[in-house]
Image (tube, rainbow, N blue to C red; front, top):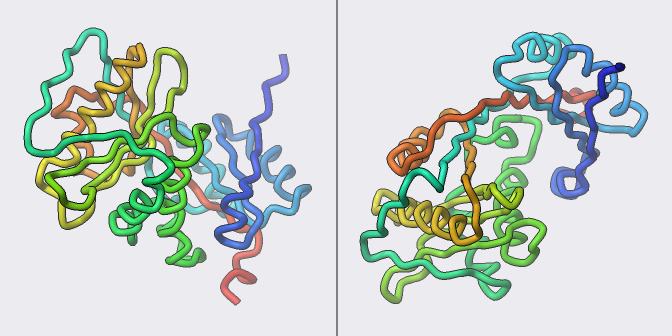
Length: 253
């Protein structure tokens, strides 16, 4: 049987943000690169965002040989819900569900928390810095407005102060929920806010009947990983993110 070719998707959102036609693909074999590059060329892509499993160094080397550059290392954690009790919430922070009316509040938190964030967009010097920040701002806003982006958004509040942070969740299946975006205002960090948000996410997922929760971040984001491990998450998988520009000199001009 002939191996299935990887799907190449084109991102209207990234094209709107950065003004360039953006392709995305997930590669699992070195031979995938030929199909991916051909599809990009046939569809006029300006650049490619490619991911591969971190243990497939042969794929990574093939991408590098094609001119791609490593931009980040994404690590996934998983937390089982059925066999491990969820700790009781503590502290003065309370959580509430966010809706469309909270979209700009949540976006404002993201604008503070993700300024200069070390994701694959910010790692690429050919991308506008402000536009990179707005990736997360837009994502946070859309999470409050569109169910296809997030099935739930929780906001952390304390007393009568402005919201301190948020967390978004999506149901990947009947048994799995994913924490997609999570942020705390810089001034409210190291006060247990994120701990409370993660607990809220676990409880929400349990209420939906899920068996597990997954979450991901850059491998360099050690503080977040420490919180997850304390709450019963375990490392699950790891992926490499590459960017390949088809005419980088024109981008620099």
